[in-house]
Amino acid sequence: MRNRYRVSTLGVIGGLIALLLSGCGGGLSRDDGNNSRVQTRLIAVDVAPTANLNHPIAMDLLVIYNRALFEDLLKISANEWFEKRAQYKLDYPSLLQSWEWELVPGQVVPFFKLPPGTRKAVGALIFANYVSPGNHRARIDPFQGVVVRLKENEFTVMPLLE
Image (tube, rainbow, N blue to C red; front, side):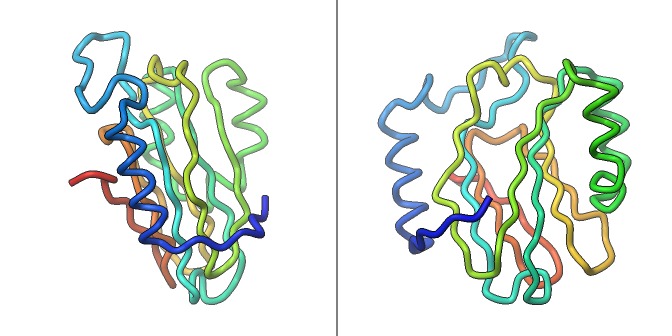
């Protein structure tokens, strides 16, 4: 999905902070109950002008509802995920939710809000399909909101509020 709107990174982060502080879905407290494991609510994405060596980059967000499947996905690289993605989705239709983006260098995605039902998941991961070698996988479920920065050869995930 291509976003034709350009937004400054500071504006995006400021807007996300304001949204979180204004009472979005239960505030910043963590739920220690066993039914709610994924804390992530908002994801912002910032794509560097030289991201993926100036090539478009596929990025997938996965929300997983089964502990064994989550543990298996923590062991694979992004290359393996993108190679086997269609089969994973066929094999685990009720245990795996995914959202897919095709991003271009310099693009900013203001924010993506996860649906409320994802709180029952056991984990959440991001895979980015870089041309450079590496795992290019990150776990995001411990954070309320994250900023994903797609860089030239790798990506980082930072909590929205530190």
